[in-house]
Image 1: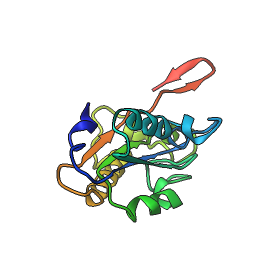
Image 2: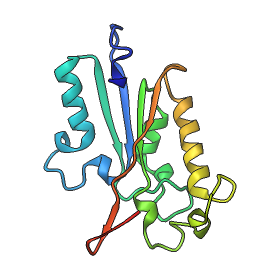
Image 3: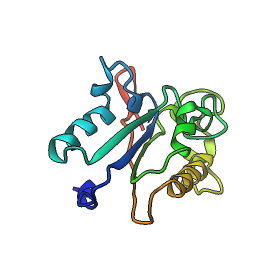
Image 4: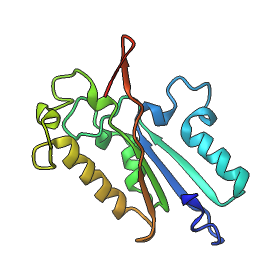
Amino acid sequence: MLLTASISTSTVLRVACVGDSITAGYKATNDSYAYPGRLQHLLDAKFPGKYEVSNLGAGGATLQKNTTSPYWKRDQYAQFVNGTWDVIIVMLGTNDAHEEPNDWPASCSEPNPTADSCTFISDYHALLSVARAHTTSESALIAVAVPPPLWREGISIR
């Protein structure tokens, strides 16, 4: 679908999967069962040798910079910014919903939050700017994936 746009080139297209433990594959029996591993398998089946998927997921990572465990301070972030990518998939935000004191600012839950009032939004904008700076071209794909809902005691919290 979207990833087929550049398969005519002879070079391998690099895909960065940026995220938290969901991306890293928490509780997966091996790396091939984390979503980046599954993506690599599916791409290899359709386009053998055309894509190289990197799993840059960091367990417990938050999107926001000033929280208990920011992605920005992880080794996976350093790997991300030390590379260039043809496709970047970002799936962060689940851990920002923790009940830790700084993880979800009240201003982000108010009606119509903006980047000026909500650090989650402003930090997401900042991460997407970093992503754009580490792509191979202006036409590189940057996708934002919606993380699964946070479940607690059988109730979905969004």
